[in-house]
Amino acid sequence: MRRYLFFSILLFASFSYPILAQDIYKGKTVDVNTQKPLDFVNIGVLGKGVGTCSKMGGAYQLDLTGVKETDTLIFSLIGYAADTVIVYDYKKKYRSKVAIIFLSSLVLPYQEKLIYDAAMVTKVLGNNHDSKSKKVGFDGMLLGAEIGLKIAIKGSPTYLKDLHFSLVKSPSVNSHLRIKMYYMVNGMPKEQILDENIIVEIKPGQKMVVVNLLPYHIVLEEDVVVSVECIDGALMGGESGILLAGGRGPLFKRNVSHGKWGRYGGPGLGINVTAIY
Image (cartoon, rainbow, N blue to C red; front, side):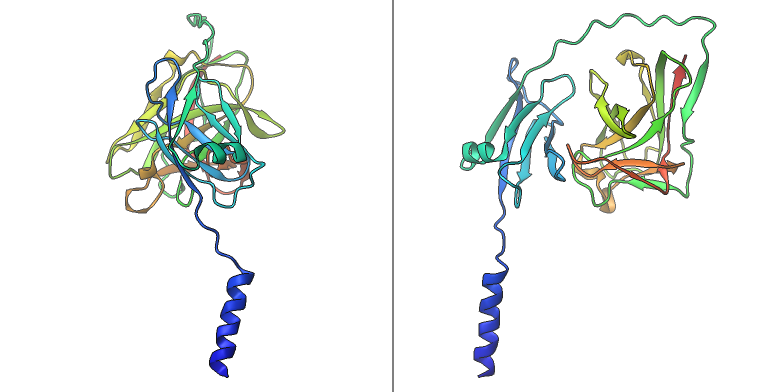
């Protein structure tokens, strides 16, 4: 009798709590004109915490388990027009084959040579980046995750010369980060302002990162959030993970490509820029 009762309970539980089968799709991101693969494309379900990035060579794997078929899937890369598709249509088209996603490059605006007046001021804006006790990283997050700091400018226009941050823990293998910048709406990062990708290679044992921003002709008219994006799985935790020096908060963070931004207390990101205004 006890065996029968135990079996009945298990049978009831199996019908009451069905196990979702994994719904995983593989694909590749490609430039529609050159037919060359596109590295580090952001791929995500808009605002749902589901997504990834394509790897070097353009390949990606996307887990859509539990995602609503009415949700919106976005493929985006700085310098390219975003491709948007409804999850139902994506699943129907690529359920039994590898997805090939083509993106079209944008015509970049003409960049005039920046000319600095002798009377302009040069100043470092942001946090100190040499803290050993405060630290932030990507542990528990997914590819496309970002952590950022608000940089308050002192005058308009402001030209950005370079960017600095330190590593408390460097990766065990050569890895990559991406720098992004956003104007803010209602106190949160919103409008991505860069025209070109800023990819930074991180090497084992590296302690300091300095990025020359002059080739990107970045001119600010208002405050921005400067973020560091995880585009390499080797950076996300464990023995090979990375930790950046922290600083004053708040910390702006989102956990995956096209996820929702959040604003968090505690340590912020230890990053700063050299500005001319």
